[in-house]
Figure (cartoon, rainbow, N blue to C red):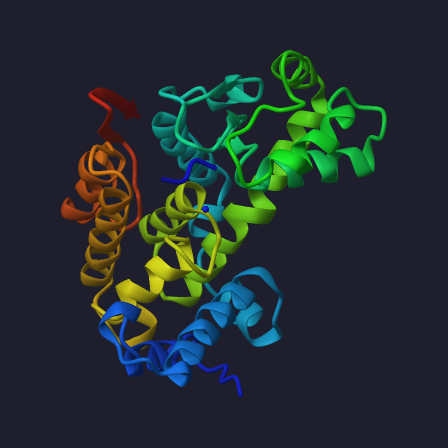
Amino acid sequence: MRRIGILLFAAVPVAIAAVVYFLVPSDPAESPADSTVATARQAAREEAKSRAEQERAADDKLIESLPPGLAGRAKKELAQQLVSSAESSTLDWRHTYGSIEDLDDGQGYTAGIIGFCTGTHDLLALVENYTEAHPDNGLARYLPALREVDGTDSHEGLDPGFTAAWKAEAEVAAFREAQDAERDRAYFNPAVRLAKLDGLGTLGQFVYYDAMVFHGAAVDGDGFYVLRERALNKADSPSAGGSEKAYLKAFLDVRRTAMREKNPNTDTTRLDTAQRRFLDEGNLGLSTPLEWRVYGETYRVP
């Protein structure tokens, strides 16, 4: 992943979280030194993350009543093409299982179908889970080094052989399946689930998914759940009675600001001339044909 680090279950599934968000300021720097406020804010983020990642009967019943949205086969394929255009500059995402390079972004090696990083824990989690199922794989010997460099951009213990080992392992069907599974477990499924609970359609589900891939599923820093909280302080989600278009605009605004605050030179075209374009066109269902631009390149899906 490329980063620039009492429940109420009713027809409006995130109303409680929304209320908590609106009761507290979005920026700790602007709030008084009140540990109660900070605790409430953190609890709301953690509750949202928990609901995104864990099965709950009432949530599951609501989701089952909704259209598949981004989880449908064709839309999921489209989602991966969209992410791949921004992460790997190609629509042919299946050719990126073996990709690996250091992008000099402070995240160490970036690799695979969604940019798993040695510096952001998700690459380590992928290799650990894969090794548990396939102990004799060609990456297992790098686990001690991966644990040591996790959270840094260091290559210590990885060079010179890790990149070659990754590319070789990507030729193994089981490792490609492991990348798919980790993508779904850590990013796709939680993002789509929470987006549905927030009342978002297919475009909104993709907006959440892309943000979670890029910013990570963290409840602090500039992680996805912090960005969602900030957006909820600007506009009601559809499940709380708000306009879907207004809420998505607020979310994209918040995300763009976070990207630019991290690095003023960050290219935000994955938002500006892709997701925002679809939103401005009113394409909340993410219907094809689609045309968008990322990093100056134009992409089309018929």
